[in-house]
Length: 141
Image: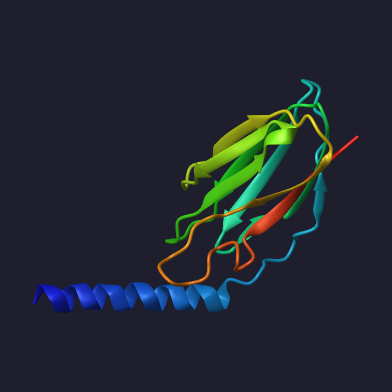
């Protein structure tokens, strides 16, 4: 009896994953976003994360100016994370995301393009990054 229930739950989970994969296309509005420097000297960026997307997907900030990412996850059942590792630019984010907004602050110290992505993966399926849940932080002069 318990094994049938487990198999039923497993089948349901797999069905949901396959359905999410089919409908997980990039949402509209994924243009580049150039962060402005606020009066307090901080570049603020609001990021929406969802099933296989980050919006905006391309973020442009200035070097040596503090950046504050506020990340919100779109309601859903699939858990997500955020990884942005660029040691030479003094950036290190590797966090699980929750439905509550989370804030990450850093000051990029070197120009360049740095990938950010969701590292999550379910069993033998493609990772969220392989599904397109990634973006680029571009640090400019």
